[in-house]
Image (cartoon, rainbow, N blue to C red; front, side):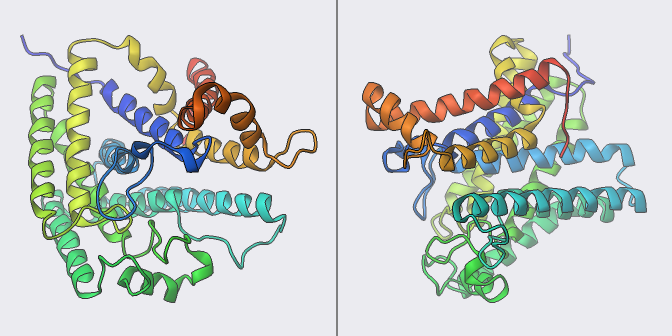
Length: 369
């Protein structure tokens, strides 16, 4: 007997929750000096587990975009376009607000606009969501795969001709960002902004791949056929990305085309695994933890950023060390050691955010950003 499902796949919410929990975990160690290597980003070329969490979220965002746009029958209309543009602007401004709040807390300057970073994680999500959603309403879906190829190939040409694989200020990505944004408004990492302007091009392709995967998933009702499609897509994209990486290195900071292929491929495979475990085999009890993150993902991510900033600037009883530093140094480090204490802090911080998310989840409060 075929197993069918007309409902939303629980695995989607769980994977979204896993990525949000992962992003919070890797962004908030007790000490950056003693963070375990798998919980840090690759310095330049290469791939670590940490490099997967953000692209996995963007991949899921593409699938969710397909699901959410079905109510418009994928037909362009002024109300639909205005809603997409409004959400894009709101998410982008929240990203700016987080950067402003961080500078305000660290510098005590209420108007630190001369040094505020313009781009960031939330801003990238906003731009990629807005572009992908409008593309999905404006062009026939059968042409989207060709657009994805054009974006990735075009970006690769930019990288090859613009010294795009160099980790210095001669990189075309750095040149463009410094020319348009200004050095003071960039992420200060060897002049390469990991969420820069040009690298938004392959990031849009990234979300569009997720959109196409969402289309392939929702076209069929048989959940086992959904599973087969996910595994097939995951295998093809992953192998293609690794094979092409000999000429185009995997690199998160520049969001290289092969990075797009491999992370989308691995994301598809992970989603397939979750579909099999949760939606087919019915092993759901363990997943409740991640559902709390998955139903309010952007809100919890923003909340975690705000809490992390506050814990890193608020001091305890006039001490020079922040609450984060004091708790790590006096409580966790003596018990678990340098690296273990750093990881313990990150896990406890994830649990703090989960507790807030769990309350919202139990009360069925969904804060959409």
